[in-house]
Image (cartoon, rainbow, N blue to C red; front, top):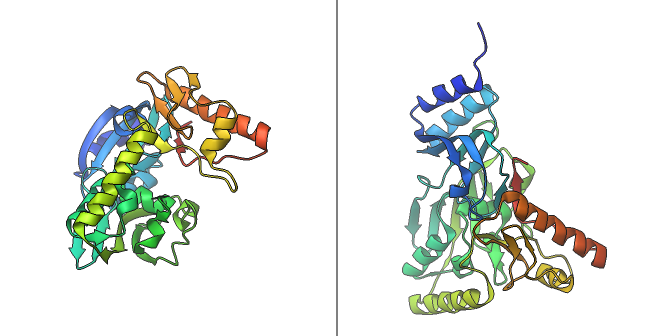
Length: 306
């Protein structure tokens, strides 16, 4: 019997009742950079059982795949992704609140989650009020701002491991550090949800703090252009934006991509950037900083399908 080709495998996948499927879906629709070529199949996974069933099939048939949330820290190339994108952005957004604790599914938006915590008078998520990613991505990279980060509030993370078993990891087992968690050492592990321990607070005070920070962000960051937030992690001794600034790169453009005149650690899409334009700017900044300061800049943004 002849082995199935990719087209036949994809067709079978679309018949498996795993959620809405879209063939040849452009990935620029699903990343905050608004760039990225098409993928062969985009799946809005409907629940955990469907996720397990899909992953089992993809692994069995050796079909390339990638799991995304809000696409806020990803730079897909302009070429076709000849495989399957599994999105948790549409159906993994449940939030359960119990006193000052929350159980939150991986596809929940951080900005929305921070607003919900405020609504319940819970403090601890104020730092997340301007981070455009999902909870899963935030746990994966221990996202943070304003001297706080996910590790300060996460008590337990529910994971789907590489054997498609559901396991729970404590805060200690997550091995959190600056923009790092144990998940980065296990690329086949997926965050399903996490448990957060917050503190009761005064709703008005929480909202006022979030409003002040939003006002500051609007003044200092290019919030009105597509971007992925901070491009580089801050090296020891000097913030990444300052390194880039001192190399004279603030406002530098390649094609439709630009190192933001407002904040040098942001690269923005001026409306017509390709993924290659953005990557070329990343490499220019990295090379310039290395030559001038002998500092290696490491991206927060993950490169996919290059």
